Amino acid sequence: MSDDALSLPLSGLRVLDFAQFLAGPVAAMRLSDLGAEVIKVERPRGGDLCRSMVVNDQKLEGDSLVFHTFNRGKKSVVADLKEPSDLETIKRLIKTADVLIHNFRPGVMERIGLGFETVKKLNPGLVYGAVSGYGTEGPWAKKPGQDLLVQSLSGIAWLNGNATDGPVPTGFAMLDVATAGNLVQGILACLLRRGTTGTGGLVEVDLLTTAIDLTFEQFTCFLNDNNHQPTRHEVGNANPYQPAPYGIYKTADGFLAFAMTPLSVVADLLDKPEISEFGQDQAFSHLNEIKKLVSEVFLKEPTKHWLDILEPAGIWCAPVSNWVDFVKTEGFKAANLVQTLKSDTGSEALTTKCPIRLDGVAPSASALAPKLGCDTREVFREIAVGQEA
Image (cartoon, rainbow, N blue to C red; front, side, top):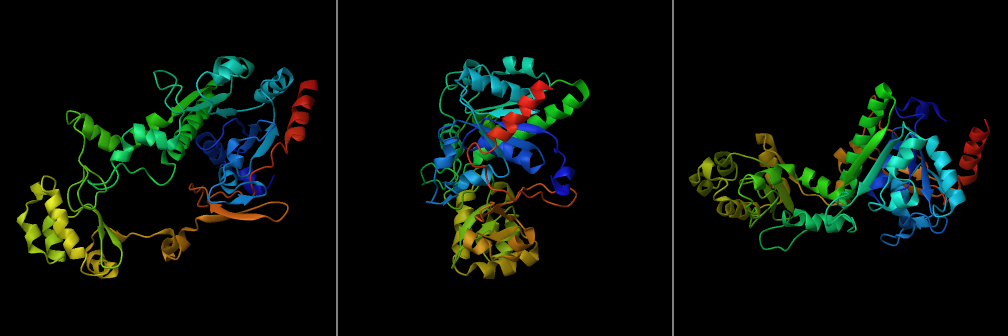
């Protein structure tokens, strides 16, 4: 183990990752980024289904490129949990672990014999993390917990886009990643408690709860407005509860994001006196009329023209970049957001870094995801020796 690994705060902790696809594996990845040893427990035939989920026809070392992204730096062991001998071996491995993560549907781990009540008898200090789509109770408990589905069910897709658009989901698995963050927070809290009590605990998170938590600002407004569905803006909708001019506007050559600004200032900077006819108390009640006036002005000149006017005046605004433009910016380069994953055979892939800086440094993981089962012999030999001792 390198000196860098030894200095990471979770060094010495062992995490068993039984999860597939995204939320659970991303949580385990973050614990690995922070120094934990993460052992991925997979099926002998095929392993994590995400190994074969090829996105944009990109593969690396025989597995999906995105699989490497959130399983980087882990170990892999294979076990058939329906086989009694394999199950007993995994139970011995659980006795050596600090954290267990799974995202099976409610009831599956209990049927296997690895539910929380059973496992805590094997290892009272274990922190047991469970991810589901909709929690363990209610009519949706057994429904498939997939990001797009939960965005749709939870109302998030009706917050995005303009008034005349249909529902618009985010273009990435927002809820999976945010749920992973919630799981990590809960696990770290239980580990901290274990330091004083010696006992572990059960951490349960789900995509639906995360969806509501992420939209707590807007959902609180909804709950306190007699459950009245918010109306998306006709132009530049970015938050249905924000007054004009908040939103994204088309310019002569692109798009511009324009944040909270007093209407009198907007009228002056855009040389559009009609806007000042609306009082600040009308910024919400007449937001569509105001935003149409703003959009007419922005269309007349390119984005840089408006930035040169707005930024010196202290207005919160920004160009709307695609990734091709974003990676060329000095801000992107200064943030140092990318790292290179490497295999022993020379394969390489670029991916993002851990977003947490520790003592001024962002942890980096240089290893690709493990080959299916490549660490089975080593890990199982270790626990066999431990049992003999």
